[in-house]
Image (tube, rainbow, N blue to C red; front, side, top):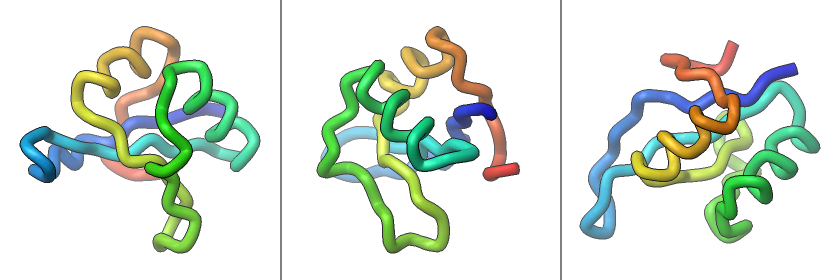
Length: 73
């Protein structure tokens, strides 16, 4: 099992955003909690479940073990 961060780099609310993804929902939620991502940023009804995270949080996620990826594998 793994957690991934993509390279989306979307401009929104005066920041740059990307996505946090995982192989399972439990792993995704556990990792989001580990890096202090607010549950409000979870998108369960998107084409794939993910959290929106800032590019700063992306770097934290990578330092905690998330794998940079262009898309969910």
